[in-house]
Image (cartoon, rainbow, N blue to C red; front, side, top):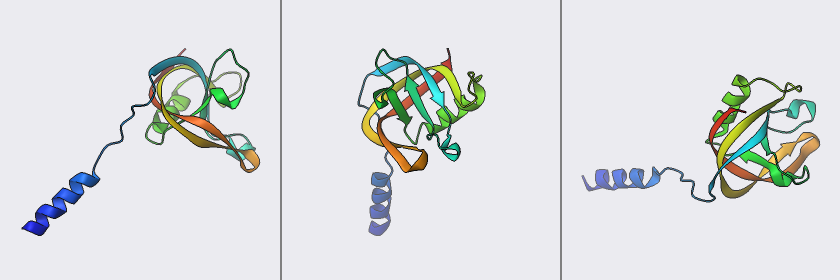
Length: 122
C-alpha cells in the first residue's frame, strides 16, 4: 500500500501544467506567415506591425502549446496578395524566452516566443 501511495504522489508531482506569467497581455495588428521552409523561406511565425525597421525585433514564434492556434488561423483567414501571409489581430503574452526561427539554407534567428491567446480578422 505504501508503494502505491508513493507512486501516486510521484505521478501527481510530475503532472503539472505550464503557466505563462511573463509579460503583460498585448493586442497587436500582425501578419501571420505559414511555414515556407520548403521554398527557402522561414518556419511559421508572426510579425507585429511597428514603427521600427523590419528587424527580427518584431518577429515572434508561438509556443508549442499555442502553435495550433496559429495553424488554424492560417487555414481560416483570407490570404493577402501573397498566399503565404494573413493579416490579423493577435492577442498574446510574451513568455520571456528567446527561441530559434529557422529559415532557408539553415539560417536561424533568435526571436521572442509568445503564448497566443486569440487570433481574429483585422
